[in-house]
Image 1 (cartoon, rainbow, N blue to C red):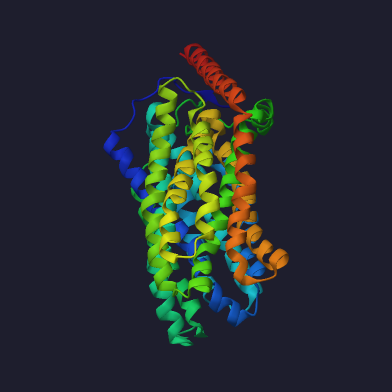
Image 2 (spheres, rainbow, N blue to C red):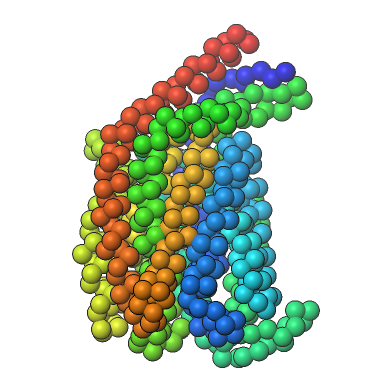
Length: 467
């Protein structure tokens, strides 16, 4: 028999400690994206050694990764809403790091595919838990900014993967086959996976330096054993809430998913484009494009999180949705420009603004999910957002570009046109989808507040009766 605990809510922790937590989570996200992004620099040696085409490579980068990342996110999201978020993150980090190392131990395409699935499963644990932690550490008016800072980790990781990875790839691939104790003889590109995977295990230990915060707006119950637990919301109630508010969630999630498709497509193939078209080495494109992502996309993520909060304070409750609309509108003319430039340095310079706008979009998007869903549903709502954004964005983005190159143009040197066609077609669709949900977004914010107020009232009454 369980009974409600007191409804009294403790104060927020010191802001300095809350930002420390964000810093640790940023480090985790950096390593997540290093492990994910490094493959974009290994396309040529993997093609050569395993005898695969661009579409098969794109499955490693996109769909095969995304399908497991997204489906595993659903049960993990439910665990996040009641379990130890710190432990969920730590276990996920160790699992994906070991799976990255496993990528360096395989000798076939199928083996590499299975190891990438392991990376995806581990990484599925991070963001739903991180969003939930951050939301409980910061006051509502700063949650978007804090999530935007956390989101910068994906671009710091992607940039570092290209910068450091470019030099590591060039050196390792140049070594040819290398003898590793226990493992045996491996190619240079396989050694790269050891270099980026093993340090991640230490990050899993770092996560245990942060504390679980109090879950705010939740109902705590005390079991017969005296232990307090978060009361779980029945799955039917979660589904009912999401169905009632489907217009808001779908316009937000599908709109940002289309922007993710464009971003992942470019991120996967721009390095290969420079190598094929301009004859740059992995180290050259890795450092230069990596710096563009690291600087501009990271700044964009922080700005996007802050700007969503700013728009809300200025009387636009759906501000985090409008950040994506604004970014897509500015990005549209750039989609025609940078892929068709014949000067590599000019083209590289033109990627700065799209990188900033991509970061801006995904600095704001997760904060929107956190405010649309009550606390006890946020892990599951985040998992749903990541499911849609990644199954469409990560799953289809790299493959959309590759398929146009392989099957429409049937010429690997036409990659620049594939990089242009995808955003030109999809950006107007993304804008229309997000704008269609503005009114529904506002109504869902109101329902989320009412739902939390009713739960708090019920808890207060139960506590009074128990007293």
